[in-house]
Length: 94
Image (cartoon, rainbow, N blue to C red; front, side, top):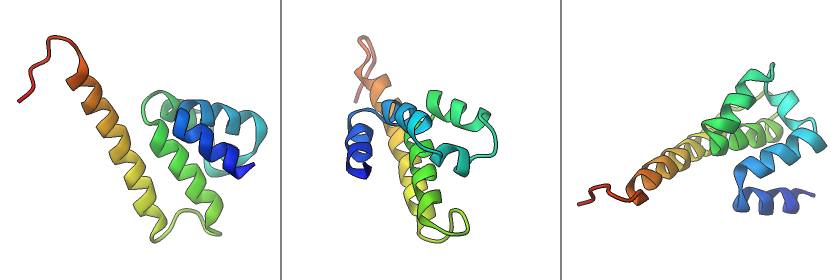
């Protein structure tokens, strides 16, 4: 099941978040309310997905090297926004 989740995440992190929401308690365990995962679904899907995955790895939440993967997810989200702006027609690129 974890391999299927990883494959879904590579295809679309939002699709993986939907499947995780419906078929596991991972998001409910990692977050106290539904607001943060909903905002993460819309704004930062890779960050939300990596935080939930790292929450399930550790015993006391996200600690130590696990924060590296959460920050890496944030950088991927920022790169997706920057790359999307660069790919728009009429944008200037150097």
